[in-house]
Image (cartoon, rainbow, N blue to C red; front, side, top):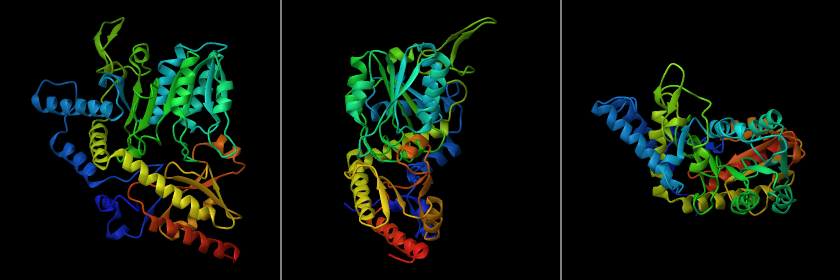
Length: 405
């Protein structure tokens, strides 16, 4: 399968940008016309605040907003829409979990287990919380083929562990962590598991009942929705014991001069006017992805990632990181003797957009023994012919910088 034949659904790839190759989908995806039109329709016809007014126009918008929450619950197979909390993104969701729950449930001697491949958003909150509460942060290493070392995890996760916080899909290496095994392992020791699903939700079918993770966080903008909208899924028993660090309007049942009573879930965790546009845009993005069918999305990204990995791996002087058997569309690499920023600038002149840097995963970059990498992250509108252009451009780059192929 070369592509899903959806490129024409994305206005960014118009005649003006027809030559552009967009390979930075792990940072954010482009938006299909359907999502753009849905957001435009909201602002033109339904721009009313939610949960506040009794007039019918606002009521219709509120109903649409809550229908989107139900849709998100169905998309990940959550038992109830009350388990879905709208946030501003994955980072916000993880920080809410850290500051709203574990700040009050960790003590000296407890352990938090993460992997060395974590995005900073799933590392820094736990670093700070461990220092503040006297807990210990422990790291699951990678195997020789740069996948999460489950054997090591079995030795590291213990009865001292209170939380395992791991990425489902590495935003650098593109490998899929064994979340089902890690969930079972955490629960065997009485620990919770938080899954960073930022890179998983765009490509993988998700079922939180089949894999009974305790927390899941992901972002809309990496899966065709607008920026500024995220999801926090939590088990009801955990959410009920969470104290929102944010207080304000619409999250309270009653207020006196000395105290307040919060609303029921999930509203008690959503203070202030929410990102209504983002929620409605996310709903449209989920509808679009469901039309494509997530297993087909996964297959497309996996095959394209494998093709690009194999093509790059055959080039002399190119190092490709991660396992040889690809599972997603994320491929990180370097070209010998050329700084990733210089390489990305060269590719930009060829109208090829790739990411260069540490990808907010500095400990992993150091583990790989480099200062930075190039990253091509592929999605539903990318094709083999685009991957071939990238490979050919790298050959030209080597000639330009070093005078050889």
